[in-house]
Length: 486
Image (cartoon, rainbow, N blue to C red; front, side):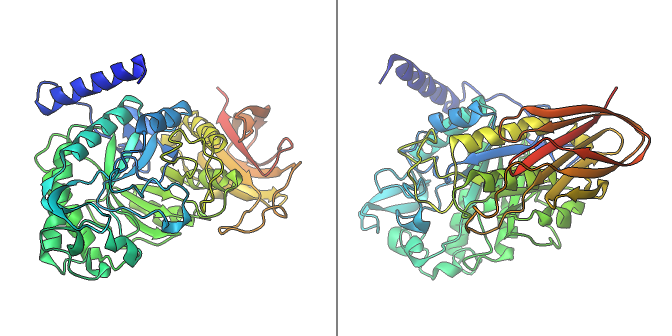
C-alpha cells in the first residue's frame, strides 16, 4: 500500500469510528429534492440539478473486490454526478446476462451481504448460511464509506433496495431463499418473493427497509428506488406500495426526507394513480423518449435510469441520452460495461457484454451535462412545436422558454435494438432547421456533441415567426442553442 493510500485508509477508519460512536455527525445539508420552481428537475446543495452518468453494473457496494474510490474518481473527472447502487439483497452469478466480469456476481468470499452469515454451513455458494435477523457490520461499514466517498465527489446515489429473481439460478443463490438461511423463510417459488403472500419474507423485507433508512438518514446525496424492474418476476404493485409506505413511515420523524423512486416500465407507459410517496418515475430503454411527454403532467422527475443491450457503439447511448434529456427528462444512466472489478476505472475494452461504455462515451456525456448546465433549464420545458421543419429528415428534440432560451438536438434516426449501424450512420450532414420564434435579438450556437466546441455561431435579429438556420457539417448528431441576446 502506498503512503497516500495508507493515509487515506487511516483517515476513513478514523472517520467511521467517530461517526458510529456519535462523535462526528455528518453535515446537516438538505437532501436532494425536487426543484421548487420546476419539479421535473432536482435541487441539490442549492443548485438546479440534472443527474447524468454512465455507471457500473450496480455491484459497488456488495462486491468487496470493486474499488468504488477509483470508480467515483472516474465519474467525477468527467463531471458526471450519479450512480446506481444495488443494496446487496440481490446478486447474480458469473454467467448472468452474458456480462463480462460482472460486478453483481461476487464470489462467496467477496460478497458483502446486509445479513451476516451464521455458523451453519450449507449455502448454495459454498459459504455458511445467512441469518436474516442479524445485520452484517462489514456491510454497514462499507455502506457508510461508499456514501461518504460519493458525497465528497458530489455524486448522487440511487440506492436500489430490491430486484426480481429473473431466473431460478438467481433465486437459488439468494440469501432470502430458505435453502440459504437459518430462519425458515423463503420456502416458495421465486415469483412469490415480493408479493405479500409470505409474512415471514415480508417481515424480513420491511426490517431491511427500515434499517437502511436509519443507516442513511444523515446523508444528503441519495434517493431510494424501491425495486429494479418490478415488472418482471411476479412482483405485485401492492408490495411496492407497501415498501414505499414503510420508507415514508421510517422517515416521518426524521429531519431529512429522502426522495423515493419507482421503476415503471421498459420503454414507455402512461402512469395511472401514481403513489403519493414517489417523486421520481424511472424507465429503462427509452428509445424513442416518448414516455417523458406521456407522463410530464405528473410534475415529477421522469428518469431513464438504465439503458444498454443495444450493442457497444457509443453513438447509440450518446444519442439516447441527448434525446431523453432534451425531451424533458431529469435523469439519465447508461449501463457501462467498461467498469468491472478488475477495471473499476472503466478502462476495460475487451468485454463482450450486451451493451457499451467507454472513457470516450463518458467524456461525451460530460459534454451533454455542460451543454444543459449552460442553459436556464429550470425555466425551460419540452417545446417540439417550435420546430416547423428539418431537412434532411432527422430526429429532433427541443426544450424552450419562449423568447428567452431554446435547445435543440438533431441526429440520424437509430434503432432501439442491435443491428448493423454501418448503413445508418452518416457523415458530412448539413441540416436546415426552421423554428418559430418570437421577435427579438438572439445568439445561435451550433455545438459539436463529440468535442463540446462551438462549431458555428451567429447573431439574429428576428421579426417574429419562422426562421431557418443552417448547421455546420457534422457526423450523425449536432446540438443547437438559441439564447436571447441582451
